[in-house]
Image 1 (spheres, one colour):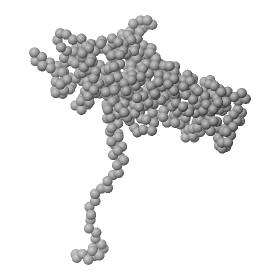
Image 2 (cartoon, helix red, strand yellow):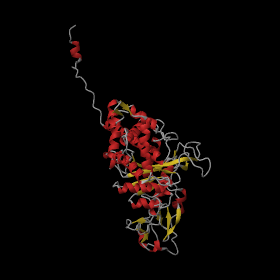
Image 3 (cartoon, helix red, strand yellow):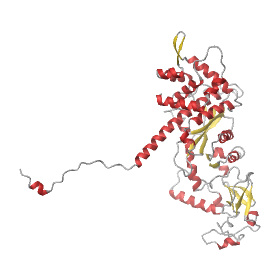
Image 4 (cartoon, helix red, strand yellow):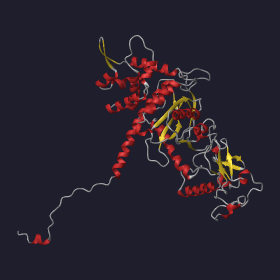
Length: 497
């Protein structure tokens, strides 16, 4: 651990302002503890920055490996009545046990309590420098698997060494890998991503959450985003995969819209295409469409990964054509979530006999040749009111799966890169055995320190890359050349031997 890296980690711990409060909350009496909470957190983060696993022995090794001045300043080396004394492993274990017991008191059925979430939120937010806190309001969210060191129970109902861990499910994305069960936790993270039309930003983790696998991840993380919003951090675009989008609207979509967030997410196959009607308009892919919309335009699926240029061009043509039949929004949501939409013919996007003025449009506008014989409400009125229950789960910022949605959704890969960086064998690999302490509090504390160290690496890599890009954009200066005296042929021929 370099002096600069140690100073940055200490700055994060101090700016989070959690060490003093925790120190005051721990029991005291008898001989004072040599190891303070601040030094313990610095040691945990420094061990993660060095790529060490989350073991208390590695925390002790990291602290005792510092130079003498840092050991004295952090209280690793002290003077006792019998002479100099260096921190022992038992003292690390003792202080950590007190901290674990204090923070675990508020945990409830595999969910972190208020004390633990406060420490995690403060440390994670402090790892984001002030110069990047307002760089973007968009985040990409995702969850992954984290196996506990404890063995699963041998039979249902039997106890396990890790009482907080439960059975979870993980998908195998590698070639030949299959979905499987694991015993442990679901960590989730919100990663900063650039705005749709903004410049690049470092992909820093803004919030994390660790819960037992029996708890549904999306509604649990919706509460984390609400806390972030309540702390004065605006929530803009939220990018998520179909695992979040397929949940009940009351568990994910509606709470986030109440925060002012814009959802950009992939629809689950069960939510794609037509899903009923409202006032005669067809509900499909998060929008309302004209009753006479061609069926082929309502069942457009997202592009496959290996799509060719011709396939992409044809897909974009279909999505643009489908947008002509969409009932366009003409008002924002009122305080109760209601808004109004206009008939596409009344809006001048298509020609329809039920809207005679639309027949004056040019021939390049689609025409409804077989309008409904008994026009529904959406055809007899130019606008209709849409309650929040309609498309509550599937409504998005952009039309799904159009080109605008696709270009915006590509930012979600930042969440995948976050999971990759904390499972990288070259740095911090949180696979089974990474942490041999058990319990929700132990896993959460060490993962938080790992995220703090990971954010520092991301900042260094980002700023180095930005400096290199700026250097490449600067035009090179021509090399300085010496001026040589010019000699002509006459000069050479008239030169005496």
